[in-house]
Structure formats: structure tokens, C-alpha cells
Length: 335
Image 1 (spheres, rainbow, N blue to C red):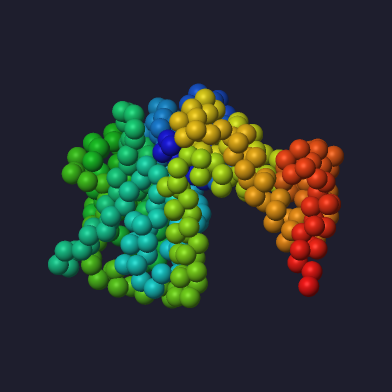
Image 2 (cartoon, rainbow, N blue to C red):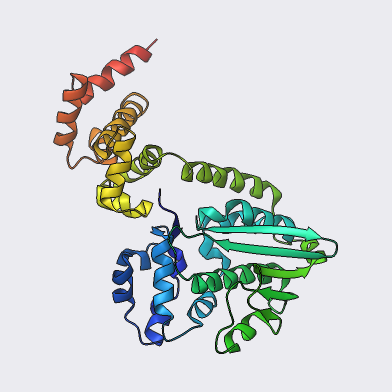
């Protein structure tokens, strides 16, 4: 599937775009990002579209990405932030960041290196299409710095902040955010700092909670790496009760267009209709045989428009009414 980033990266975009004289909705439309991305932080947006939006928005404000980074906290990273919160030391926090950053942005990689008394937190942005990544890089670097300062204190400064790209015309915003030791035209994007900082304990750490959250997030990571039909199936099960199992909505959640999603499902010998049907036939057995939910409620959570539509569907596929199905299941369980 296309690499995507959570729409939470847009936090503050609307406000900053208007401040520099841009029409935020018009800019979103220009790069193909749906308006819903401004209000749904978990919507997946193609990383190329995110990059193109930032670069276009920086036309008259070369520090646009950096200024956006000031409008956010680590919480915008969603499940990744939950994992970081309960790690015992900064070292474990940054290792967890490297392991799970793709849950927030599939185009971003982080790495932690330790050598003698120096530590390096590196960052790479991967895009499948050519183009400038200056704004996305600076937004991500500003976000990483916010993470470091969350645990090391707001006045903490790295020994140096390095960028692959060349220096901007004015260094004012960069030096205000990163401090005086910001350098350009380097061989990596990242921060160099004292290795001893990695041993800084996290007073808010809860090891038991960290294990539980990491187990949950590991499941999310596995799901993100699943095949297209598996990922669609996971979405279908979550969206059925909301009546949102449309090709338009699911394609948007996965960061692809409808035609691409149809083609990729067809390449695996299936379709959205078949996945919805399979999910319903699996779930209906649980609801009828293992619960006493009213049939109208079962119809609703399976995404049917009415009880009568559900009844017709059930009779077609099981040869009996839903109520008869439930009674037969209860009879089999009776002593």
C-alpha cells in the first residue's frame, strides 16, 4: 500500500496557513488531501501528498514546517506517544520511537547510535516520488526535539542539530528553536548530544503499563504490515456498526484512491463486497449463538440499514430466520 502519515500531522496547519495568507482548504484540495483530515487525526494521508502540501505552503514562508512543529506536543503521534510515555529512561524512549515511528508516519525512520560519550538521534524521510523534503524534514526534526525536551526539560539543548539540506536565507527561526549550534549541508538529519542524557530516568514511567501498551501497539504494527485484504478486513470489522464500509471511506483511511484499492484487492482475488460479506458471516455467528442481543441491534452492528434487510440476508445465506438460528444454537447448548 502507499506510505501514509496520520492526519494529526496537520495540527495547527489551518491556523498557520491563514497567518501566512493561504487558503488552507484550497491547499488541501490542490494536493488531494480530503478536508476531513483537518478534523480526523487518525485518517491516513499519503506521505507524498503531505510533503507536497508543506512544500507548497512554504512558498512565501520558508520556515513553515518549523513553525508548525511549535504548535504540537508528542501526543499528536497517537499510539506511539502512549508507548513513549511509560518507558523508564530516555534511552528506552528513543528506542521505542525507532521501533514504532512508522505507526505515525510510514515514510519516517528514526535511529539511535551511541559512541563513547556521544549519542546521535538520526531521522530519515522516505518518499516514493522525487521532490524537496525540506519542510517535512524540519517539521519532523522540530517534533523530535519536542520529544527530547519533554523528558530532558524545555531548556535542554543538543550539542548540534544537523540537516542534509542547505541553510535558509534567514536562520532566525532555526536558532530560536534548535539553539545556536544548527548546521546545514551535513551527511544526516538529526541531533548530537551527550550520551549521559540517555540515562535520564522518566519519573512518570509505569513499567506494567508500558508492557500492556507495547503489546497493544505491537498488534497495530502487525496490522499495518498486513496484506491489503487483511487491512481492509480489519477496517471493515471496525466500521460495520457505523455504516462506513464504503470503498470511498476505506480507500481514504488507507491513503489510496478507490481505483487503486479495487485493483489491489483484485490482485489478491477478492473485493470489498466479498470482505464485507465474510466479516458479516463470521460476526453473525458470534452475535446469534453467543449473545442475547436483540436482533435489531445485531442488524445495526452488522451494518444493515434495517432489521428486514438483515432478515432477508440471513434467510438467503443460512436458509432459516435469524431467530430460528438463535433458538437452534441455544437448544444445542442446553443440557
